[in-house]
Image (cartoon, rainbow, N blue to C red; front, top):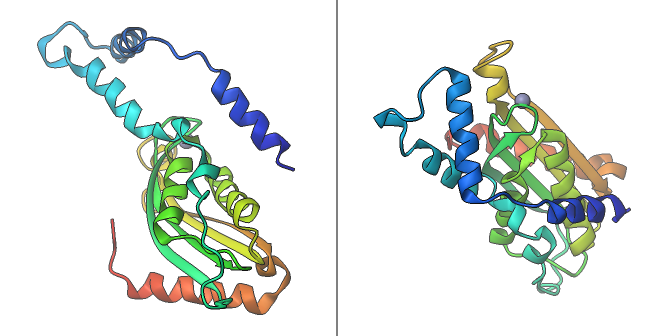
Length: 212
Ligand SMILES: [Zn+2]
């Protein structure tokens, strides 16, 4: 089951990165493709800035999501109730248009002895978000990695996001957000558990001020 993930991370690792200079040249090509002149003053520093922005947008390729969760804590005073973290904001880019995907992730899990710090969950989201993504894959990767590393009794992940490839191009439908979810273990098998998680997500979603 872990095979496909290993394969894809191996594939990512095998990618030969071009030099910074080659990357900046590629940006100049796109500027010409857009119909502008990369040698005019206002655009002179643009390739360098775009390449640096890419380093930020796609920083997730340089990190192993499993290592992010490597340090877990053994059971804290026998706590075995649901742990829910809502409204983790993320910025990603769709792998079809390289356009921004902006949204939030809600994560729940039922610990089985091991728990993980809140900041680690946010960091896990970040490592997967800072890659080229489709929302369904992002949702599944977060849930599956948590399940694999923490081995809880179940994991639930809900992602709500707006896709700029839908709002600023193509069909031009602003205000549309897509919701995806992945339920594993108890969250998939037990309706009560799933309902409890979803009601927490819904409650905080309504009560919280917009965090964008
Ligand atoms: Zn897209």
